[in-house]
Length: 269
Length: 269
Image 1 (tube, rainbow over the protein chains, first blue to last red):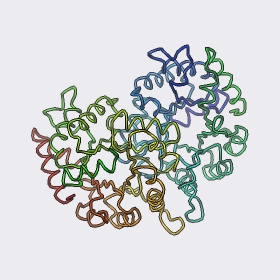
Image 2 (tube, rainbow over the protein chains, first blue to last red):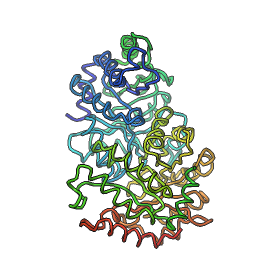
Image 3 (cartoon, rainbow over the protein chains, first blue to last red):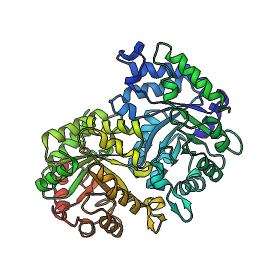
Image 4 (tube, helix red, strand yellow):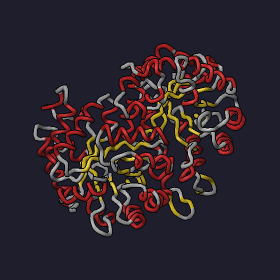
């Protein structure tokens, strides 16, 4: 099943467009698991089990594993999600971007090794950095960085060429060309509602992955208003730290569920 | 020692500006090592030993290791380079790009785990995706994608904003702001000599990492003519496949050395 079909299944199953980001930081694990040798796996599994019926997607951030040489834990977590919660969409947040045979290797990493339904990709290197992901067997999706939620997102994404900012050029390229090659999505930050609406007006019903709700200050209702697809749904709204670290006590999983429920209720699918 | 100082030491020691890219493809290993359980490590070490006195830098491409879950081999290879050949600069080609704490984790990956002197980074997310690499202890360098050597490099990098293409905005941002934060370099493809000269005119003596010589069709003499720094040197000219796969026989290491010598002679430092 391709990324878009899987996502429809996930929206229906969860009844929400909430995505739980898995950015495991050992310094913030609750004391009850902090000292376990497999603390990262245990922490992530507890969060996953507590939120899998509420979330349309899980989004592990690979840097948190790669910095510690903990790819095995990431593999185990990804395979656990795929096996235990087949209705949930698995997005590998890797922001890869390279050409030709290198991109083919990144496609293997995301789709074969980690079993992701979709992977985040940086568009800066253009078409031949995206094609190899679609040439890879298995209908994996590609979610392109478009307008990111950080202050530095302005540096180049907001430069104006031919009368419109660079991020809208990315949106048009994805809508008009790359989405003919396979299932695409775009990353647009919650912290820029006007630009979220701009991108939505360009890309029709393509799914938008929206970081920046919760700890980064974005608001779920505003995201729904400016970002939902014309046909309904269309959003994957990520919350990481606000869910993961809702409590540092023994009740961390229950607290994560409460926070996820609260956010999900603002993001009906 | 910071990236720029290390690079000066490497240019002096090698007498060339050749960088050997390590993109190990098991399908192309010579028969004499193809069946060894540690074939990737053996292949890379043989190439390294055969070229370390000629090359100013080695540039492992992480995707080739990550696709196969072979990060341990990459760690061993990187540590081998650092220990056996301290005069050579180690560049991790990862093209990472993310913000805040995620970028901090990528800095740990490149500098602590793999011991790189510098890492390639995608500029699309702007200043706060670059700062964490410089905040990381150890004076590691950052080499920003600017004008890449692939056809798709035109898609966004050549869009014109305020009278000049996006890649020149990246070059100016690096020269005027980011290089105040730490040791920077830029990636500019050998296949666009005019644009290489453009970037050089903007960035003064900053080092340029130039892929696209050899298998991709770029010419070393042209790169020297258009890309050398005003003060001399200033280039890290990468060749991967032409060196790695110069022969598929038992003489692969000698053939790699011959090819590296041939290219290095066009790139005096």
